[in-house]
Length: 327
Image (cartoon, rainbow, N blue to C red; front, top):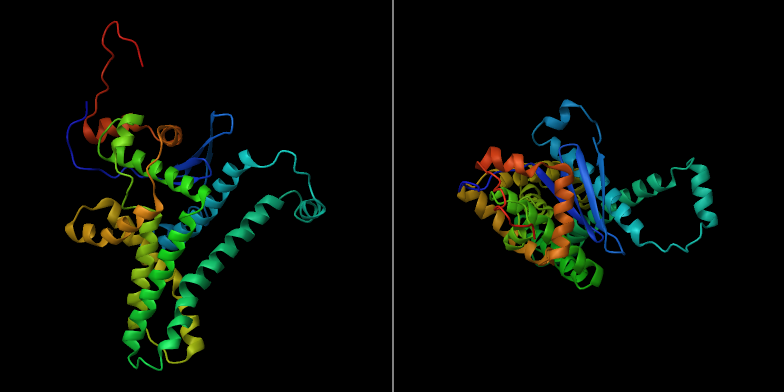
């Protein structure tokens, strides 16, 4: 049994993928996918990330920039891996595929993943950073205060984000992705509350978690409002350029906030986490038991949860009663 104790940071994190869950512990990560035949496939790899070993990756407010890039790269890689189980086996290699493989010397998939990652970042910048500014510019004839214009821009940015989240949640595949997202959170919450990682315990745990990427996105919105409020320029082109150039700064500050949220239970930290947790009600759904089984398989491939519970909560595994069999 485990002694009662407040939640304790485990160091593991992850994301939902197509019909599965990725869990990461330091440089080691695992992707568990429920295959079409019902079996769970688990792949374990190491990912060191960009600028591995550089002291820059340990500096506060700088490390968040690299962490964001690493998350994008690894996330895309894991999504592609999970999708490979559901690709059309009868699909034939096209002329374009052969040409790309020839040009990239057999590394077409890696190049394509890199291009998609860059395109995704550019699209996100355009939709969530640049677009709100241009929408707000239509109010400049009616609003003379630069401070108020900045606040309006921030509100529009948050509304666009919420509409995006709600819109994609209506898609069938995304709904299942959100259910696996919930399974991921439930497993981490189960462990960080000191409970043995079983399907039953995980199902009873919360599907919301302070270190979630959804909360990170809210902090990005929140920090951008503050920075754009205090850093003002008059030229319209300079304003757009400034918003783009400040993205690494925003990401760095937001990472420190989400990192603090995952390690501190201070009342101010809890209050800051409330909006992100509320948005998570949209980006997570209650998973089924078989989804939680997949998430548990991913956790166990990279994390010794029994040792963690023993060290942090004094957990002692109960031996089965004599003559009793396992369920």
